[in-house]
Image (cartoon, rainbow, N blue to C red; front, top):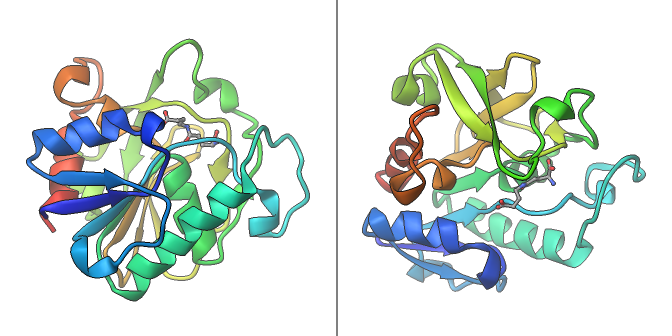
Length: 212
Ligand SMILES: N[C@@H](CCC(=O)NCCCC(=O)O)C(=O)O
């Protein structure tokens, strides 16, 4: 991969841009549906909560959400899915992927204290499904970071959940037939300058994605 679009707001995507730069991949951050030809892939970054209307629910324990931003990010995702180009969704980005394919959300996890950002990212153990892309990268059990209070619930069409926290919260997914992957954790905050000894190296996942 040479050039990746990050579907987000410029001032909030520096960590993603820096991690891609370390991997020799040029990025552009934009919320305009791009001229797909000029991009090799898409990153859907983390962010706020998601408009419950997008998964057929009334707001219940959902925090701040930006309905316009959510719909712009879904429109960009649609363009990359239709052109069968690789997509990596991170945190909110993973949740948008599941919603795009018709899945839904838990608006506030009962175990959010295990996952929420408290002055800094939390870390917790997780388990990857045998044979999954995450198990091949990190083995069956590995520690990841965490900064969220919502979670995916029913899987969308073609979506397979492949990584789970010990409390059952979904931490990773893939599309069975399309080059679409998502993680609930933040590899861009676990690599290079942000590398930490007590969790996995996020660069392995980002290299996997940029290498497809
Ligand atoms: N609101 C959702 C998604 C949380 C999320 O994406 N957090 C990351 C914040 C921004 C960032 O660090 O990139 C939830 O709470 O589940």
